[in-house]
Length: 226
Image (tube, rainbow, N blue to C red; front, side, top):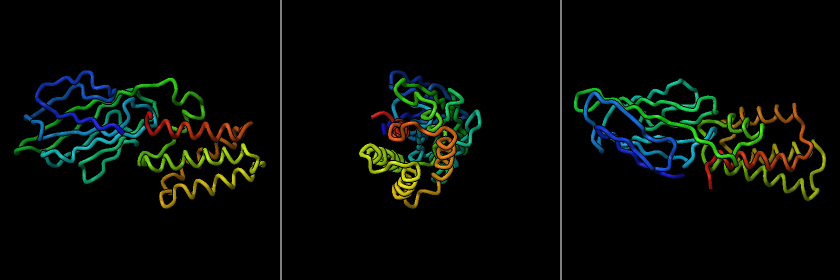
């Protein structure tokens, strides 16, 4: 995950940072210097639908921070007592505006942050992959995504070597593998796994190994470019 720190100043335009989710403008009711409101972005260089970014204001001296995202989406969550926020998009909107308000030296202050989605032709090119990134839990972690991708790749290898041959064997092995991979975190992934199951039941794969690798690639892509 790339970490790009952007400090809010009185007038600034940030250019050439290589991150499409960049700070482009803000307004203030009071002056915030670089220590008053610092936002660290933890996320991929090319932010795409399904990928997770974290906005971290924990080093800021401004207090009582509140966050608002426009247009409203359930995929935006405030964490760490209001000092951080996490966000993911299903791709329906190409741009989101995040308003951060706080209290500084007895006055209200506000900044406006714009996130713009970028796309890579190598990521989420199939219907299934696009659906997968839209189903991902917003509070997922990188470790969980990696483990789940490894799980689907492992089952694909077992299918390819002929150990698993029937649909029931593949389903049972996949259920066991995903449960083992996610461990105590599986509850947050149950809605994702249910939607994936429903999709596969409505569109049975001709080649399970190929489809399982397709799922793994979508998960890897959602975790950011290598």
